[in-house]
Length: 222
Image (cartoon, rainbow, N blue to C red):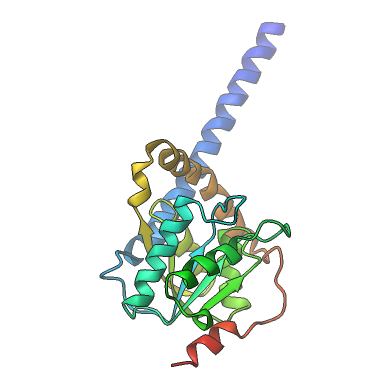
C-alpha cells in the first residue's frame, strides 16, 4: 500500500514538473518571438522620444550597482547621440530609505544629462509596472527600453503588449561578471512565467496613480 502511494506521488510530481517546464518554455518562446525584431545596439537603434531605464539594485550609500550604472550609461549615450530627448528612470521607491529612481537621476545629471530631461517614476516595482506606467501614467507611446541584454526581450515584449511602440537596447558589458550574469539570466525563466501571468491577468500596476506630465514637459523643451 505504501509503495503504491509513493509511486503515485512520484508520478504526480514528475507530471507537475513537466507541466511547469512546458509553461516556462512556452512563456520564454513568446517573449523571444514578440521582441525578436525590436532589439538593437546603441548605434543602430531607431530614434524615439524617450528612453525608459529599468531600475536595479542601489547600494546603501545611494550609488547604483554596476548593472544599473551600465544601463544608465547606455541611456546617457542615447541622449548624447540625439537618439532620445528625455529619459524616464523607473524603479523601486517602496521604502523611504531606498530610492532607485533618485539614484538614477543623480547619476545621469552628474554626467551631463540636464535635470529637465530626466523624469522619475517612483513606482516601477517590476518590469510590467514600469511599462504599464510609462503608457498609462506618463503618456509615453514610443520609447527605447534599456536594461541588460538578458532582460530586454521581456521588457520589450511587455511594453509592446501594453500598447507602447517599444524597441530595446541591452547592455552586455556586465557579462564579464560571469556568476551574477548567468544567475540573472537563469532567473529570466522564472520571470517569463510571471510575465505570462501579468499579461493573461491584465492586472493594473501595484500603484497606478494620476497622470503625470513630466515626460511631455521634457519633450516640449525642444
